[in-house]
Amino acid sequence: MGDLPLLILLGAVSVVAAIGLLTSRNAIYAALYLVLNFGVGAVIYLVLNAPFLAVIQVSVYAGAIMVLFVFVIMLLGAERLAPADNPPGETFQRPLAIVLGVVLMVAAVYVLFARQPPAVAAAAPVDTSPAAIGLMLYGAYSFPFEVVSILLLVAMIGAVVLTRNK
Amino acid sequence: MDSTTFVTFLSTILFTLGVMGVLLRRNALMIFMSIELMLNAANLAFVAFAQRWHQLDGQLFVFFVMTVAAAEVAVGLALIVTIFRTRRSTSVDDLATLKG
Image 1 (cartoon, chains in turn brown, purple):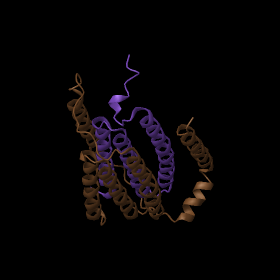
Image 2 (cartoon, one colour):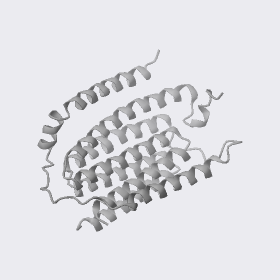
Image 3 (cartoon, chains in turn orange, yellow):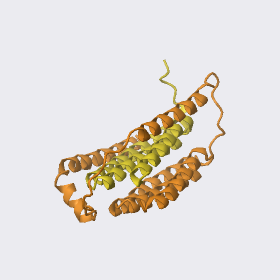
Image 4 (cartoon, one colour):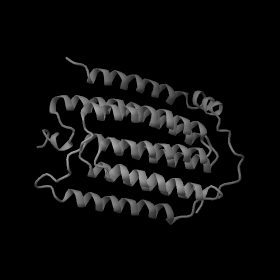
């Protein structure tokens, strides 16, 4: 497809940002790498014909969730992370985690490329405007929508109760 | 390789990087950010398949995943702040009082 070189470039930036998140010693730098990752994700959504999700990603993920992270990092003074050293008696955990992570990656990539994807019939491109998403959200998915709204209410109450000074 | 396969491959790579971040980091905030990376990788896979099959349901699921992620981040950060108030440390190694 014509989008593939652009997607490869965006994917490379995204993976580099994720590796930067993993290896950063400073929590603020790690949060900024994650913001970069979310921004690149938003551009990928634009390429994949999801403009509503691209804007939602920027405004909710990068704009609200990561801002909350940065607030909490600065509140707790965690931007200066302690140097990583294993607790005594548990020196096998770090190499084991790396080995298991690599095994997971190899297995997932193998499953992805082991079988041919089924052929998709040439269907008409679907309307991805916010109007179409809204119609589906309030139509076929109205019950999950209500459940998610109750979930947000519960999360809000939980956050207030947890941080209350007794 | 078409774009759907590549984006799913990218989602796989990002997800396993997030898993390694959860396993290797000991600061609770870094673990949390790796969890957000994993959720973002799953969202990428959803959008790739929504674009492939020309259905909007995948994008709607991403909407719900983002909402659930926002709720989870709110509660999780409230927990981390509360734990930090008593223990003055965000390292998960210090949260070992349930060790049997």
